[in-house]
Length: 270
Picture 1: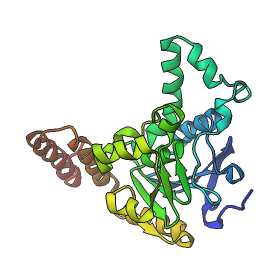
Picture 2: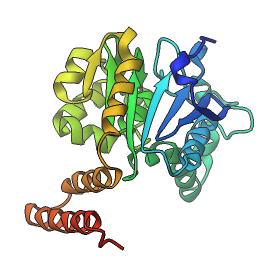
Picture 3: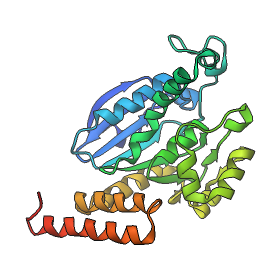
Picture 4: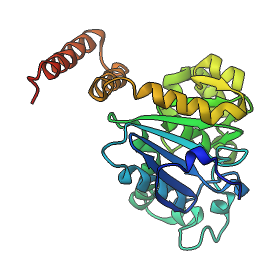
């Protein structure tokens, strides 16, 4: 296993298990995928560990950086999931398919929990992505608010080539970022999206040389911590809601949010 970057072992390690390490340094948490020998391939155990990381964050954390050790961020679902035996102690995909609709829905919903907490309004989350980000790996990067990519990044949504669909919450952010037509083309063809295109179409906020990836993510985290926490929380909630609100409803939401901020700054908040 590759040695982790020393700057990402600073702070307090909360846990390291099932391919996931969580460390906290004051207002910043770092979640690291720690199975580079398998290109950080994902499994139900890893998804449970990711969900646990979200629950374990102390209230002081404002920014979470997600990264993967080794040459690849995550090459996607471990293909062992498609074998008859599956993973030890886990239902295989074939066993899942034999269950009734409610059971199957409940299992997939549990898996999705690893991907949902990254967009909490009280956090800003950054994926630092290098090498392969395929399938579940692509969807994990999409689960974050922001993406900093190395210049060797390769995003791809390969689920359709396996006869499946992207079901780990990746379709909504993908369409929001690149639009329906381009999202359909990326998913249906399963092609690679490389760094230059990723930045051009909005998948990546920033592209840097691979040797600068961790530093760029750290610099972005520091910049995000510069503004007062409550102002950032209100702004994130406004922008998230803008997708579904009408123009007039967004104006109303802006006024209400600003009213709360002004009262708080005047010492008149609840």
